[in-house]
Image 1 (cartoon, rainbow, N blue to C red):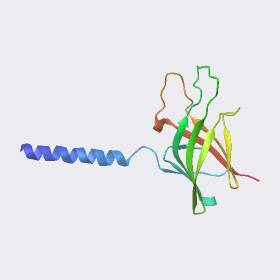
Image 2: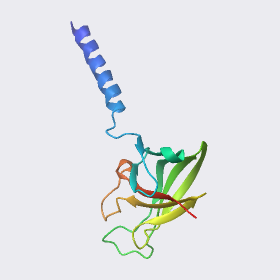
Image 3: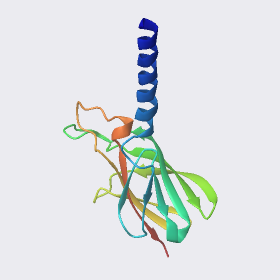
Image 4: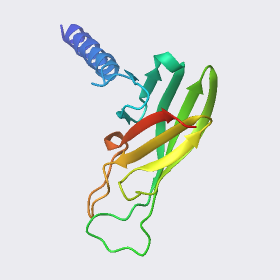
Length: 143
């Protein structure tokens, strides 16, 4: 009887681990449109169906932005790695958020203009976990 109960406990534990890891609460792919703001969390992919374009938020490479409530000599910056799949050609790109006047920074890739900002903004005494970051983007055609 004890062996059977242990077996059931092990099966239940394995089921919880497997099913718990399958549902992260967020979809890996989201639909996006040109000239419309959208948000990606680390690991998510924006799909622009009409453009045969995908953008994935890979990681935050570094975040040295001066926290709110602190006086800094340098404003700092945040670096985010994205991958762009443009008509079947994939390339990595590092976006550097310098926190422009309106909070957005701009980067260009081929014929695309990418406006973006990384949230949340650091605050004194608070740690930001990898899963807390979100990249807010607007992609448009340039020139």
